Amino acid sequence: MYDLETLAASIVAAEEMARELKRTYRVKEKAIGKKYRTEKIELPRQTVSGRLSIASVEGTGKIREIFIESSSQDIVVVLMVDGVNMVPGHASLSDLENMSPHLVYLDCFSTNGSYVVKVSNISFTEGFELFIKAINTVTIQRAIVIYDIFL
Image 1 (cartoon, rainbow, N blue to C red):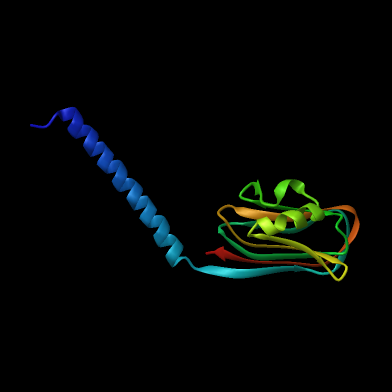
Image 2: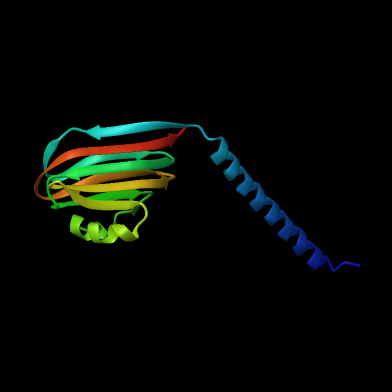
């Protein structure tokens, strides 16, 4: 004969496992069959002192690429993804340049007198916000954001 407590505990455990498997399967099914729309934000060349908002997006999706080109290292890039800053601790561009060889999603370098920050392949479930803070007056030569938003 079976002990009723053991049998009841086994049934509860089996039901929990079934619910978890069902939830996991649904999430994978939604991700595979999900339709998306690719969007692009491009800001024209502009002089900035203080804060410049580049993008504020709500929803679920993936950042394909962010490209920011500046005339100076005197900016701080802030990328809030689902409430988390993905660019390390409000670091300066020179700090990011030193870190970027060690971070897969972040490139920071100087070329022909310009300073470039590139961020790529970051998924989000609630949304993201991208802005820069200019320490001094700087010229942003280009700012481009390409991302997919799930429908």
